[in-house]
Structure formats: C-alpha cells, structure tokens
Image: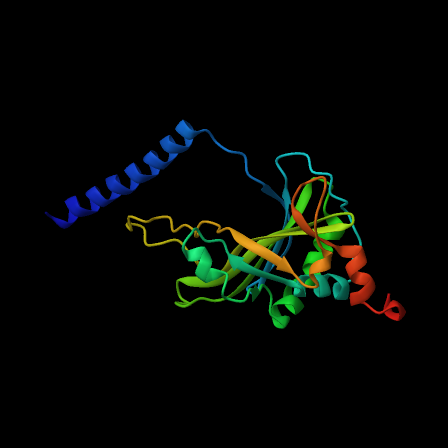
Length: 223
C-alpha cells in the first residue's frame, strides 16, 4: 500500500472513530455534567475552577474559611480504591492512603479558599494538583476532585489519584487522536478523627462535620 493511500486510510479510520463516538453518545442520550464557570487559578502545579452543578444543591457558598482551617480538614482525608470481590478482601488489609501531601496542600489550599469565597450556592470548587508524569514529555501526574461546603458539612469527592493525564494531543495521524484523560475512578473516603465523619442528612453523602472538627483542630487563641 502506497504512503498516500496509507495516510488516507488512517485519516478515514480516525474520522470513523470520532463519528462512532458521537453516534454512541446520541444513542445513549447526552448526560449533563458539571461545567466550568470560572477559572480561579491555573499554572503548572495547580488548577482550580468553579463548576456549576447540574441539579439544585443547597451549598452554603460563598463561604469564608482560613487557609489553616481548610488545610487541617483536607489533611484528615484518606482513601482506598473501591474494588469488587474478591479483590476487596485484599484491599481492606492495606491501610488507607493520604490524599494530599503537605507540599500539595500548601500549593492548592489558598486557591480552594478563594474558590469557596467566590462560588455560588449551585457551584462546587474543582481542583487538579499536577506534577511531571512517568513520561514527562507526554504525561502529567494528576490528583483531581472537588470540594463544597453545606454548613456544617465539608464535602470532598476524589476523582483521580496520581493518574497519568496526556499533556498534549497525539500526532495528527494517530488513531487515538485526540488523546483523552483516563476515566474517573471510584474511591472510598475516610476521615480522622472518625467521630467527625458523618452523613449529611440532605445529600445522604458522607462528609466532615467541619465546625465541630475545627474546634479541636485549631486552637481557640488563633481562631
């Protein structure tokens, strides 16, 4: 097969993949997803944006929190990746992992605080904490998720933990064009001290009883 015919075949194949994807989305119905309304901060280390929820959520935004308060709360979160049986039995033997290192909290928390100050009641604060990936020329290491506050509960959802995201699109004739990020995973979250990890009666989701936690996490003299 000549080089011209090869390039033509690859172009047709790539177009066919995209068309198949669009047809599949149309057949399955287009599920509404949260969408970005404002970029709070973006650099090589941190991305923080506001996302509009697709259903009414009675968040307490905008809300004022100090950086030390939010950092103390986020430092208490850990997780396990959700597994099906029988892998779940082995996963439960492994201690939960901390979501954020101290340097990551230092980088992202100021912008999360700003996001909570600017968010509307129907918006959440989405974050990405970035680092060079295993192949830095093509991948970036990404921890991502979102937070929201519905007084007195702080909600956090983790979507990616040190996942390898593409840093740019693939070559023009690559059958995988454009390169797509990995699908979000499902994680089981934990919080310490466990007595502040409760069920929000409105959303039915586990969340941190933030105000009670801050009473013991932040000395009264500094509040």
